[in-house]
Image (cartoon, rainbow, N blue to C red; front, top):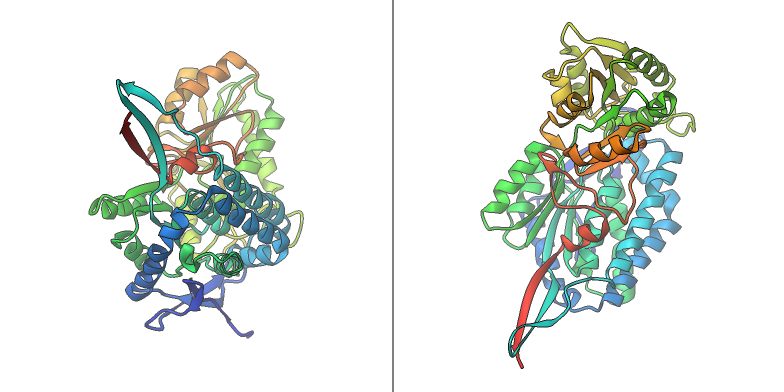
Length: 482
């Protein structure tokens, strides 16, 4: 057995272990074997990270936008230059196909950091003016302070970037915690950013990484120092964070999950819809809050669509070596997630039909077959709850009103798509679908310039875009007598 990789926290520019020496095992989802350990950080470690971030805040708050931009551009350049190394860490974290990780994640990550570098110098606001006689008013947008941020395991590095890049661009300091199952890429990035901060002569405490479990995350959110808590995670985790933050009125940014409907009308190009939906449903093993996992198809094309989708699913590559370019997705992230996906299929009602898949692949690692389930009803568990696996469900609808009712009839409201050649229908659907994003004849495409975030139990606050940047600022009115 090869020697285990030892990961460490990065606090105030220094690599540290947990103060009490506790560690967590990190499992390779491809093999199911432990390949690394990371700190199980406790209260002393969180205190140290928060103290470092608080000490660094005044200088970073007062830094010019050009200084903030310079830091972020150097981070982007470093990630781009070390893309292969970072992709290796991310793939070991997650089991993802390496070629797709480089093109679909590392590339966009670099672009997103560069977007926020530009946003740092383009903070817009209302014009100053005289709104009362003899008085001039101006509006200042200021950084909030220390931000406690918790990233998930489905996109460890990208979701970390979505959090720290706008926070740093706005002048905040950061304590970031990766998931306990995927700390490797974030630990690597911490060292990269630490070296850049040192090179630029900036306070080391601007960016800190603390590894740990749920208890570590709870300690971060409940800590009195942060002015804002931001997480991507489950609804349960979001509710706990919101409740904890309420005790001292912290600002909260929550991205919690989804159950994205893909509504396919009778005039849609079936081949294009099947291709787009299967890709968006199975990419990253369906472990994506925007994944096209819930398809609603007009009854007149239902059977043809299901047949075509099942055929596409059966041809989707998974379960082999993650370096194979024909593989779309790798394993589920961990044993608990494999059990969750398996449980949904095991509990299917009698009226459901598994068209293809519905089983684990092999007995090593956490691979699951691409799965299509039809014959479902709106109140079924698998329709109402997030599976977070390579499982696409199909329901039929009679008309537009029923499609809208089914689409909106869940507690999540993050993303959706409409597949039709009728422009007027597409515009009506984009208005009536109660989701933070509506794609038309495509699904799961993101741009750094456009906001990402939902409603209802999908959370609140926006990632990406100028809206995501502004979420990490506060507004101050300044009035002066003339």
